[in-house]
Amino acid sequence: MKLNDKLLLAIVPWLGAKMIRFISLTQRVVIYGEEPLKKEWASDRHLIISFWHDQLLLMIMGYRGPGLKNLISPSMDGELLAQTMKYFGQGAVRGSSSRGGRQAFRELIALSTEKVDLVVTPDGPKGPRHQLKDGVIQLARISGRPVIPLTYVCSRGYRFRSWDHFLFPFPFARAVYCYGTPQYFSRDQPLEECRLRLQQAMDENQQQAEAYMETYGVSAV
Image (cartoon, rainbow, N blue to C red; front, side, top):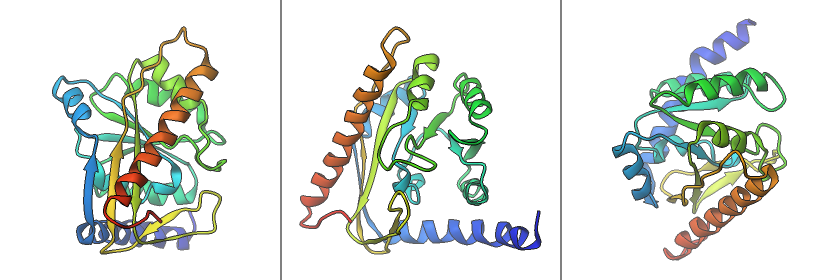
């Protein structure tokens, strides 16, 4: 590992965790749709949480469950994110659809027997933006776990010129986390039918979160 990379890993995750906590602390946050999840957790059942890649930065602050394992790219950016998540007590499985995907998928299947929730960004790591790939469906069908759409929107922030228009939320903004209806998939259902159903559920949850934001008299970034 290069010296510059070592310096980045020593500094950026610590600063990133501080920044995430500061932004979240200053925002006016509302969480919708959490009750079905609480019932699942109370019954010692665990979930697959699915959200779009551009909303990743503050997602950890909207989760109040028993623990997470995240599927994170094996790139350097992914390593920085994985190290940052450690400050929140969350683990990572390294892999993506383009690098280490099969091994990462096998690890997620193995983790589905443990008492942790699993997190997937189904349009990552390279898009297309907000277009669902099949991996999350395969994971749900094999593990038997429901998939929970999750959306984060805020009233003030910056959109990067990246493939996903990555969102950097600003402090003191209004923020909404919106959990969607649990989606169950069986092995005998056609894969494309399942993919389209979850795509629709995630799109509708995005629209619902934006509609909640409108009720406060502001629009989502």
